[in-house]
Length: 256
Image 1 (cartoon, rainbow, N blue to C red):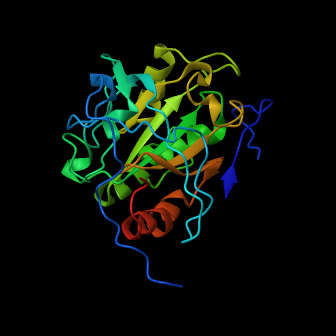
Image 2: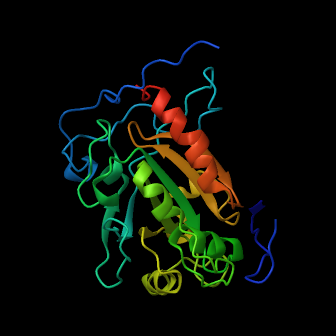
């Protein structure tokens, strides 16, 4: 089931063959010298070829490859393992931090498990499904819809999945989220994954209509290829990632 909010939504109402090649871990060819903000945790430069917004057409063997997401910069809180993100010391966070062409264990992320997949989501404070989705990612129950404490982040961390969320709007539709909004959001949802600000979707608005939140994207950490993107809260997101997206990564080479 997917729940999506549009512009007029409020917090109270929901809107609505042959064997595969060896997966390899080498990732794309990249430049050897770059700014620190364009380097991953191991000093490897972020790829610069085929940057864009297009997602892979399918997970089949004949699917058209997706483009790479740009190395966007945000302000927010970088999670350490799956501990609660503490408000108070926001910093600049670049997507390059999660780039992992060699499938190494990135220090301080998901317990030393190599990061394979980045699940990026965009939310707004005013959006009901965004609040529900965030509860299910973090294991919180701010909305009262997750009494069992389901936590996609904890469930999928041992498989190499990290969650990164960008908060676009505050409580008012079309009004960019502030650091105060983000701090409250983290507290309410007991977020234990990376939480960032993207006011008025200044970065990520190139991918979708900013009013159609939540927005979700799967990114191959080996190459930063956009594997899939869609709007709405899919309550079976964890199943899709585990049974479709990760097996594809495990059985296919990284985008070159």
